[in-house]
Picture 1 (cartoon, one colour):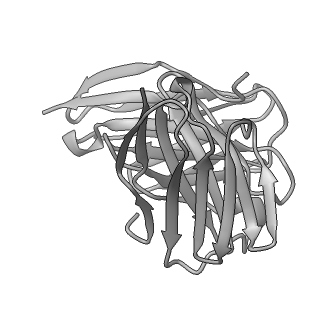
Picture 2: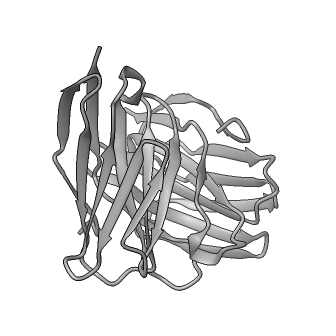
Picture 3: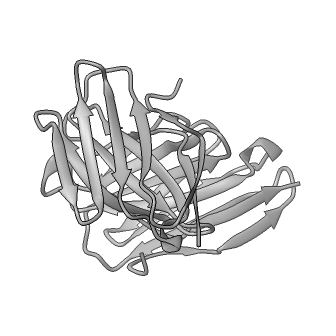
Length: 115
Length: 112
């Protein structure tokens, strides 16, 4: 979905480095999410936010932090990257107008490799 | 553990055939959604079925939901090579959080 833009698309970093993955959206949606995808495990929720003052932990928030700088921007940080954080990371949005019946709109992902 | 488990993990068919994928889940849900993921891309929403619905159609897609068995199926009729992708079911279990729990996915290959 071109309305949800993730940068960078690919990133290789070393263990212990701090990195930030960025997500911006032009859909005007209030709700934003960060998921990670690992082979055989599907997608797992890291953090989600309903507005700039609302941040919530997902299933696997340890080792990650987020910042909702504006309605349109939601960044994910790894303070000290470790190899098992190697994964494909997705940002998603929803407008929430239908509550939990609002579908998610995904960006194209950031492939992160931690060596 | 994952809420949704999909079966089969991989499916290979000829163009024109039908493809059926199944999803089972563990807890009560508000709705179940199906997403498609093309290689190297983000997920795209296909269809949503609410817990009080039993069947839903969208173009060549047909989704069924059996809440007594905690299972759903996605049928793609008259498949095309462009349907080659991974398909994920996702369940909404919490009230008004929009949080989805995804299955591991079914990889579909449609041979021309």
